[in-house]
Length: 341
Image 1 (cartoon, rainbow, N blue to C red):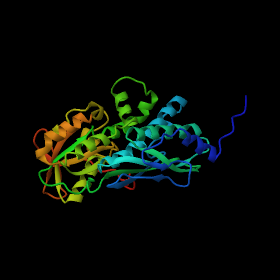
Image 2: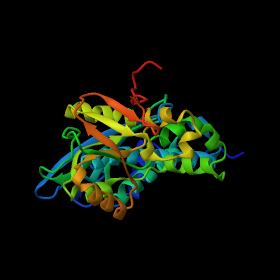
Image 3: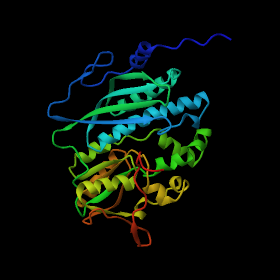
Image 4: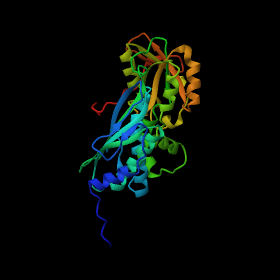
């Protein structure tokens, strides 16, 4: 058998990773120098966020061992990491602009890493952001990817977690809990990603979370949103954070979500829907008088928007109103990297 081709060194790998990157708006100096130089618009504030994905924590290669499956998983990892950062900026009503990526990669991961980076750059570009630099290091342990994304927002108009008022409506995009549902069935999905049926749809929603940047921009233009947070830790956990920031409480109407067979088939419905789940959706509170305008703006932006409850003046009290009219403490909890298993 012919010998394996030699592995590319650090500089050659960086050249391959940066050669195909598209230029971005406002980029004066892009990849290849010691630092990127970018130019924000006049009258804009900058919003900066960062997220890291760690092998065996955010994804597991053993889910799929065949080469085609690994390529597909690498694409999902890249697009999900981009989505995690895009979701943070959407929650601030900021437009994504520039990103830098730091990677700890194993020596044998050339093709995997290139696929992750291509998928990440493409997902960012779809929302108007460009990858303008980063850093590459070798690791002999679990691989990791750390993305920092910079966006811009009209000065003084950024959303924040604080600001919700008693009587405001609670709304969420997408279907909270689907990422958690996928996590419970990931090995089953990766055993046959092309299988028909509900599991295929669940897997596809996990592999490529929708960016909510456009709907955030549409809603921001209305001036109706009073507070916002992204759903990266689960509906219960992120709603609790929003209520704590505003000194308010919340009541969720269970019937507002309707039936979701993809979630219900993955465990106790309330546990999956309200518990830890990195869905990368938006949770917002809006002026009740602007409900119709917000619904129309979300529809035109192509994002499903569910009005799921109401903010109360009972600080810290999170309640679930079930379909039979009974009330209970909102089930679930937020995701915590350092919580006891």
